[in-house]
Image (tube, rainbow, N blue to C red; front, side, top):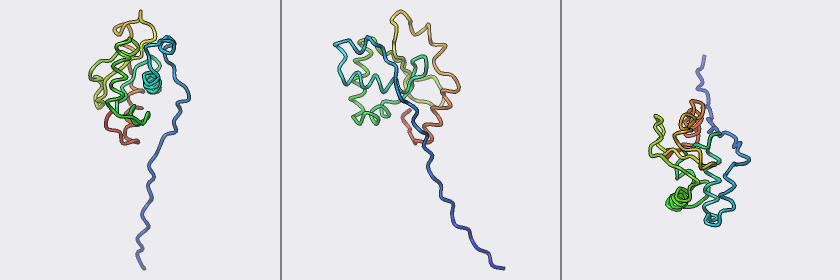
Length: 141
């Protein structure tokens, strides 16, 4: 009886299908003349990574990769959006295993961070982000 070593199994890298077909952004940002086209593009891509309450912990490098521009460019656009009041940011996400800063798109100025902080991200959102990072090999989120 002869022993034959089987051929190695080919492992394919899994990629989830991108289900983002549209984004929701504040209308006032679209008509605001202080918001540049670049600012608006960054706001749209940030909105693509937000949950239903407008929170996101996407990294700047991921945004830069999506928009095919530099990391400092994204940082500058987000700083301007914060200054204009369309985005709020808190340092450190406070979620274990995730390094990104927590950002919130401001749809209504009367709703403050403390009013909605209980709705930031649930376990389903956190697990999805971790799974996405493992599949894509992202380290910056």
